[in-house]
Length: 457
Image (tube, rainbow, N blue to C red; front, side, top):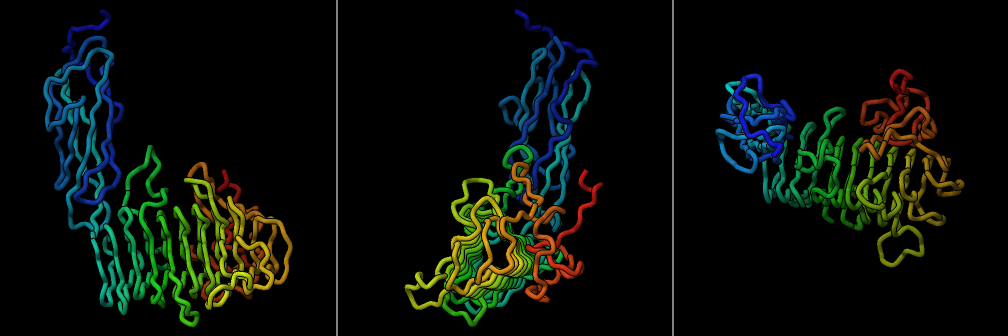
């Protein structure tokens, strides 16, 4: 009985919108965005009749689709809104492929005509062209190009005897469960400021402002087969996988399988690096955030110099130490492969889990020299000049989804390294900072850069 059934025809009585611009997350061209919605309000006592709702101003290759109060269509007439009531408008977008390599925006206008007055909500969508591949096997020496990203829908296989080069600045997106399998050789050749990026192909938001980029387990990972050698990961940013980098056992320790240099292996639903009975070297790299501990090694020969091992994994309880070391001590000897031979020099091992699986390395060929550990303990023949019970004071703020493993001014890792243990190749960190510039060496993957007081505010 309180509803005013009469219509107002005054040109001063118009609509109010919950937004003036409806923006969609970037999508790959040829695909449809998630559905976004907004509310159209009648703030007046009397009813309003919207004489026309339509979309125009759409540029080449842009398509917007709407649903008004539960009805889909391209145009609507005489839509009534009761006084002090509202209606929902739902919109999706699709962007056609173009010749543009970088992300690009397309626009449209969603027009409402009420009482002879035109009101407009701007529609904005963004498209990304990509080279999309399925079941792609590289059977001869091949180099990708960095012009536009690649999108792997299921598998990219580097066959035996073939070498695949991925140049600096290349981004490779992976669909659900997609992976790289390396039987031959894979050379990822990023540079400082122009890395190779490996990530999932969801470019939209999980909810609100939280991007899918934060989520682990979105694609499989990179798998190096038994007979694959000479692989390089230089300036690589890899994130969001389920299995991370997996290096199969080869039992051959005089041929290096993998070199990881100034790279970030981040956010896996298992481990970011799993390797067995292989030779791996790593310098200046970050291994961070994984459900089962960040690095899992069995036997083999390893050298990690100025690396950061950190775990503040977000999506479940962490089930293993940051460093899981298997086949290390004489008691582990059960088959022909030699026990682990490993060194960790000038590293940071810190996070929401125990440091390493083997608390007592006596009798092993595993050495931690000048490493910062969260655990409290004492040096011995295997732990040498370590910082016990230290805190690296990362910039990471887990509750705010900030995972930044650089060092704050108060860090216990500053100046605690041994310069003689840092290879010349690792002199500059992945951000281009000189480890030797201050005359003392910081622990971990990142050179400490002093934060000024004004920067803290």
